[in-house]
Amino acid sequence: MMRAALRWLAIAAAVVAGLFLAYQGYVALRLWWWVDHNPASTAFMSARLAALRDKKPDAKLKHQWVPYASISVHLKRAILVAEDDKFADHEGFDWEGIQKALEKNEKKGKVVAGGSTISQQLAKNLFLSGDRSFVRKGQEAIITVMLEGIMDKRRILEIYLNVIEWGEGVFGAEAASQHYFGTSASRLSAEQSARLAAMVPRPRFYDRNRNAPWLAKKTQIILERMQRAQLP
Image (tube, rainbow, N blue to C red; front, side, top):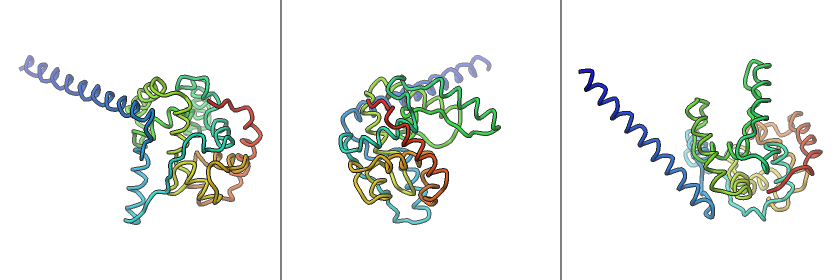
């Protein structure tokens, strides 16, 4: 009886391991394909569209892909300063930033800082759900390592700028530029870019509260720091 149970346990473990490895292979192939093909959507975009259609069945996302060269250098600098100022140097993880975030969260007694890099955020948005489980964080780390190994920094930033959320149903730099300023991503000014970068942590909130005092304050902070950004 015990021997049979152990045999079935071994079979189950082998199946789970096989599925795990198959999924990693699937992710690696998708990333390899996206080196020179643009993702039409992401897991996060699909989840947000489903949530919007629960309220409005014919809802659509605002999203238009634009190449890296057609995105304002101001926005690239603003995003790097606001979200990941060590992007050009790290290999997917900012360990110092993670440590600082942990210390800040422990001091506050709740999660107030993340410490995730642009690569980690992109890994999550492309493939994963929004839950905060250890399993999901582990998978995010694996995808981040693959992402950094398969793509160069320029491509990672290009995809990130085209798929991140910037408001209620608004995704990517071009849609955000049109939504908030009525202009293209290539024509964004430094101040407009800083404002968009300041919105990234809470895009839907700031879409509804565009005159929030903290948004204006954060915009100025980013604006003052933008010139130090290292573009890939």
